[in-house]
Image (cartoon, rainbow, N blue to C red; front, side, top):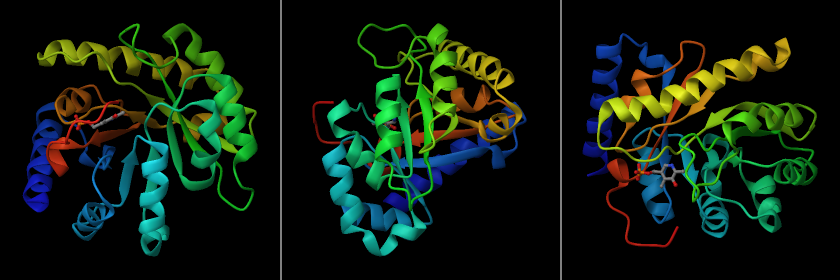
Length: 240
Ligand SMILES: *Cc1c(COP(=O)(O)O)cnc(C)c1O
């Protein structure tokens, strides 16, 4: 079933790239494995996937440990909300962190990143739709947060992440992503050249809006689609 789901996602990506005249090399798939056990991740790995996203610290750390034989071949992304007392687990176990939305979290992650590991790869999460309930820095504060991350030795600033307000309509979905891409370009152009070169990730698009994310892709960036249910199936309810 996972294989069929993966084929279906790849055809959706291919079709959206074609319609919008986008190079499919620019689109990458991050498999969101939250709530699914290590055996499902292994199945996805066997199907060729190498990037996995987790939302809950404890669950993620346990899964990474259970799959330690694959550790050097998998890139693990933390994509959930993070309390500052849990930063150490992320700093010690993950390769990427997508939901940095305040300086305190960034500073702790940098201090707690073990020196023998590569710097933690960071996306700043932006509250692009201005929803009260969503985490993320407001768009006008994103640049200064991004700049503060450049000074932290344990981190590498890689791009922006957003979870827009869900809309059923493609045009409205696109409008939200377009705002993120505009902000991305503004921030990118004000970074020093060496940081600009690696600030190339737009973490956007999920099962229900990946076509919109592809349509709004930036030629200067990789769009990292975070796909869960379309790949692994419906999750059983868990409060997020
Ligand atoms: C759960 C989750 C996803 C995946 O959502 P689907 O709709 O299942 O594809 C992507 N990004 C984040 C931040 C999530 O929490």
